[in-house]
Image (cartoon, rainbow, N blue to C red; front, side, top):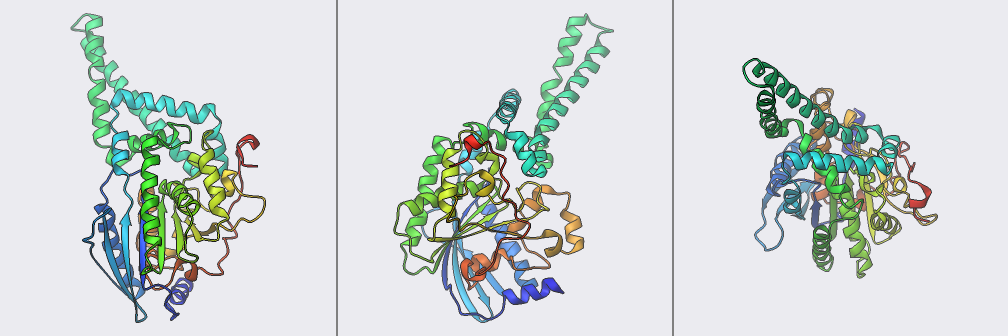
Length: 413
């Protein structure tokens, strides 16, 4: 009943602040094409509209530029149109995922060494255990797969040693190792072992700095957002970052605001399921920490950060600015840190269904809730209220953490 009342309050009649909106979505480390997000939005928005009692429909966008679509909503008699644009970097992700089996194990060694030798892994565990466990998961699983392959090689070699010379039997036994490891990789879609390792390896490769090709792409993203801000027909420009897309969005928005000419009250930032400390805790992440501090003080935008304790892949309720040692001594405005409260905004049956499906829960922010509270992704991206109006007066959750475990030498003064 409480959840229903919150949902009713979020749909109560209010002056329409947004008739036209442009949403820019920055994905996390994801090799899939942007049409995957279009289909996810179409299916989940339809479900949410039925549950919450509003209307929403989607159609293709035929204009040139990055991939996107158009959404029209009708809420309490108010009609709003939103363009949704995917700021894609999946090609960079795909290029980073081309490592063979031997190269993957070498990446495992290098990435583990970076996080261990710098002390970052231990600090991340202190901040939140869940993402730390997620970071250890590919290490344990890949070593386990290697152990299985070597045990199979020993068994084959031992069996053949009764028929062949010992060295021949050993070589033939070792010959089963590559196909077993390749077999594990072919079913990685079920276990996400290689995917997670490559994600962490990409983040750690430059010890916290973005690679040059990604920096160039972020400049392009900033250009697209600046173009939308200059469009007088738009009431709101909303940037959404999910997972590792959050820290990319931080750097993009810092560039946009530093360039100037940002209309007051038009720019908003929604960060979802962030894993910012995985990069900001690395020793060469000074630029990211500086961008976090800069963005946290700006009056040109409204920044809402949403996580959930049920999401083991995010730093739930950790203020991404404060936890990164980037909070200024005075003047900090953002973000407002709230929880999507999966355990309450999903029915007990649905929550039990997804509770152990960690990657599915990590995408729940982009999906329908069968017991919606004040967080509704589709009302935020396509509804008649701006993000600032929808959450005006909202304070960060009492459970929000501002703890930081970075060494003093790496924190911003």
